[in-house]
Length: 342
Image 1 (cartoon, one colour):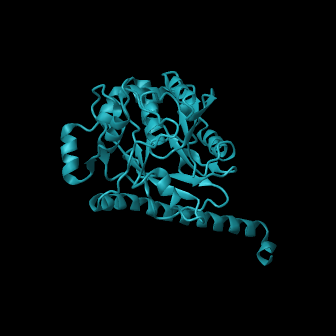
Image 2 (cartoon, rainbow, N blue to C red):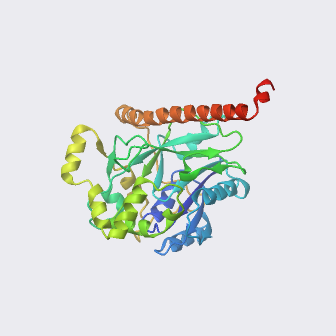
Image 3 (cartoon, one colour):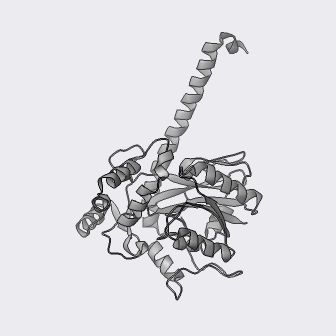
C-alpha cells in the first residue's frame, strides 16, 4: 500500500516541519503540498522537504484560498502521478493519530467495498503564551466539543476523511468529505484521531487573520469573524487570552471532566527532534520512528463518547439529504404533472 498525504499551507512555519515529519514517521509515504503566498519561512521548509525527496511542492499565488479546488487537484495527482492507494487530506494544524498500529495498518484493514475512513477531530486548547514550541505548551485537550452550529464556541465536533485514491475524486471544503465512485464510507467507526492545534499563539492567529484566506469564504465561520474583528480593532492578543486555559481553568476542567491532559503529540515530536532542533525526516528504507499503541479501556470509552456525536451528525445530514431529494422530486412533479406517470 502507498499512502500519500496532501497538505495546504499558508504561513505555517511554526508547525509545518513538525507536521510533515510526524506523518512520514506515522505511515505516510509521500506528501503533496500546496504553498499559498507564504511569507514566514513556510516555503523554505517545504522546499527542504522537496529536496529530501519526500514531498512534491506546488505554488498558488492567489489571495482567495480556493481550498476545495486546490486540495482536489492534489488528491487527484496522488492517484494519477504518485501511485497512491490511499490519500489523507490534511491541514497544517492537524496530526492524524492512528488508534493502534500505523496509519497504513489502519487503512489496510478496510474491506474492499468501502473507500472512506473518518477521523475524529480532537481539539487542543491554547495555553498562556510563554514563547515555547506549541506542542510543549498545548497539552490540554477538550473532552466535550460543541455540536456543529453552536454559536457559543469555536471548538466543534467534526470529522475529516481518508479515502482510496481516485483520479476523479472531489474533496469538499474543509476536507470533511470526499466524493467519487466507490467512495462509500465506513459508518460509525473512527479508527483515526485528528489532533487539531488551531490557536497556537497570538502571533500565529494574527497572521491567519491578516492573510486574506477568509475573503473567499462562502460564509464566514464564527472563529473567522472573531479573528477579523479582533484584527481590525487591534486586540488579537486579547482574543487569544480569552481562549487560553489558565491554571485555574485547567484544574476546574480536569475536575469536571471537560478537559484532559494529553501529551501524546508532545512526546512523539520530542522523539523526532534532531541535533539541530529540527525534525528528522525518514531516510530512504528507514522504518518509521513512531509507534502507536492501542489505547486502554478508559480512553476508549471517552473517545467513543466524543465520537458518538459524529454518528448523530451523520444521521441528521443523511436525513436532510433525503428531504432535499424529496423536495426536488416534488418540484419536478409540480412543473410537469405528467412526470408522475412516467
